Length: 373
Image 1 (cartoon, rainbow, N blue to C red):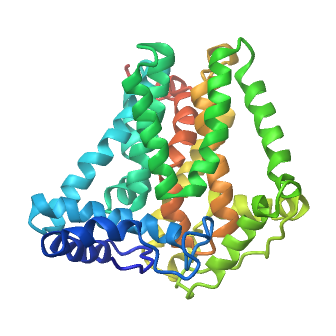
Image 2: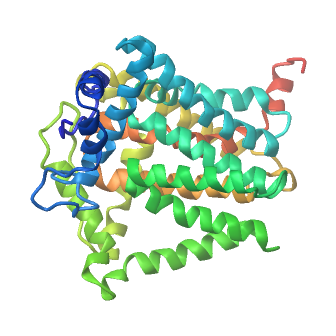
């Protein structure tokens, strides 16, 4: 199987999938075994590396192998594969929607928009790429955990679904797994303990931050800040894209991470700027989209619901916010390409925007405009 690192072009995934599809019939043994073979002298080392690593290539190889299976049913048609792919991804959207619908009752119109129709989410998750698969497995995890706590309990089948989805995240993007585990841990504790969920999440993440910057004292191999720094270096060493921007060099220290935080928040929550469309024309709609989200946050600040009506100090809602922000921070620290971090962040914004949209007093605007409910 090709070990090329495919970054954005779904047609390249498709073409490599066709090669694997033909290999399935010409050499079934090689088809089954090549997924587990490393072509590098370092073997199976380099778990966190972004190049020259079996684990990094595995992300793309999963996509290629999945498409080769789709080709059996689509006879190699790219467009049929897109339909099959989106059929799988839709389960993730539905799972997340059902959880939010159980929390924010009578907000279905808002939830349909935030869980299915956010422009960048809709665009990037529907393409044949890893982001859609991540959305699907995250949806499986959150739906089964929420339903396990609040409805049917944790059956053996439900636990298997959660376990398999977590394993798939490990194979697909290991740094996402590193971010979701503390959020899941805090969520479980918050469901079990009769304590303010925001307090539990704050304590878990405070302890997690201390551990993050001190694991290297146990073993140099566990130096997680160094892994993030190396990931930034690897991205900076890639061939420059049209939308490449400058990043402040990161050092493996708490001080450096804190000093770089303003730049990270700017990149993740403010860019692309409208003026940056000249870099690539496709940035313009995403610049308009991010401005729209900023306006929504302003509305939330000035027109949020009364404190007693808030459904924001909820274990699942806090899980989504803490998990998404931690992922977005990793993206902001390491990715120097606007086009790339627009795609990466697209599937996580819904966890932040949904509670914001659902806690705005929309009836205030309806009454001012004399719109009948």
